[in-house]
Image 1 (tube, rainbow, N blue to C red):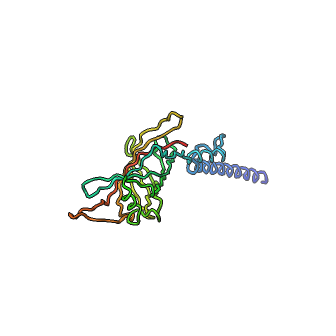
Image 2: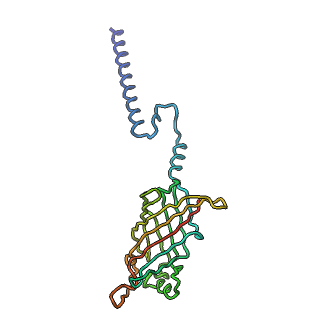
Image 3: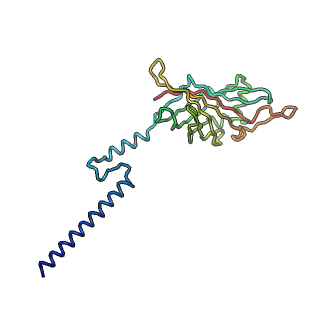
Length: 236
């Protein structure tokens, strides 16, 4: 009787261990396929260390900085004057950078700032008026800034970039059209990339609200401002 009972216990124990093994194998398979992004991580003899995982993550997140080359960058704007003609102005002092991990800049992030006091429309009196509280109020708001919030490829070398533009402490989302001109090395071995950027804003959205009218009722200065930038950046 004792031997029969012992044999029965042994059989039950073996079945129990077999069921445990089946359940454990099933659990490992589920975890391995659902939770972990590396097939065979738990069952394969090849193990990915935490250091390797950290390095892979860092390589994915790091983006190369491309600094704006001020000697080869132009920041222009255009507004209608008296409805019949166009006045072009520019900013002469600015700074910024582009960050991207892809050679076509399809994941680019951009930041840009302009020294408002550097505005130049080739007319000192007009420049002084633009710096006054009627327009930019340069004394109280010396910087104009832009920080991108997204980018979408729309063609072989064209992108739509959205971002936050801040003028006179007012921030609005704007969309810019970006044309990527290519990447090359200059005679000194520096890697450069070029872009043409266009867009338009309503100046009154940012508190540049001064207005005057002609005898026929037309605006002396249009509300719409066209932006035109030719940007060259250098790989850091």
